[in-house]
Length: 271
Image (cartoon, rainbow, N blue to C red):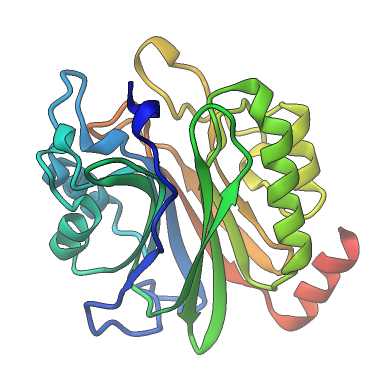
């Protein structure tokens, strides 16, 4: 029924609410902890929305940058709450939000929380025939240099994936930034052929190490559809997908750091 009331998405929101440093919280100033987490509109298995539960999970993770999918903005099903503003205020983090779809009342889309200052935000529509999808592009200040974060949520329909991946690739080719991260809910298993095209541009450390993460629970348990990709100049340290939280997804976190300049050139040459 919701598809009868879809409108074009509104402009993205950028909110630097907190006077945070451009240096991450890690003891190593070059290190950063990033997370991707599909929060299902902050709803539990009974359909009750509670942003404080999501904030509690994220507080445990204590990440510097957090990409969220399925974020509600003042929708009736979530008591008209501005979920990203509520979570950001609880965690004392800056945030960006971009709706993928707009309804008669409220919107629904992707968001980013950051302990780093947010410099710029853009939203790019992805091809979709079933439900609107988008790519949230956020530029952060990481130790005085830009970190470009692409957060997305691809469609649930297999028929949409090829065009959506092609659109992602076009954007990444158009903007070949150093120090960039692509992360989110890709709705594809790790060995899906379409993901290999992304790996031609970006690292997929969890796949490369053959880590058997589970990112979905319940009837879909065993699937690994939430991923974090890194540009060649970034260095992977460690990652995990702890079985915690109130959503039907588990969060995925990754520790990364900037490569030394000579290592970044080697990494680029190898790719």
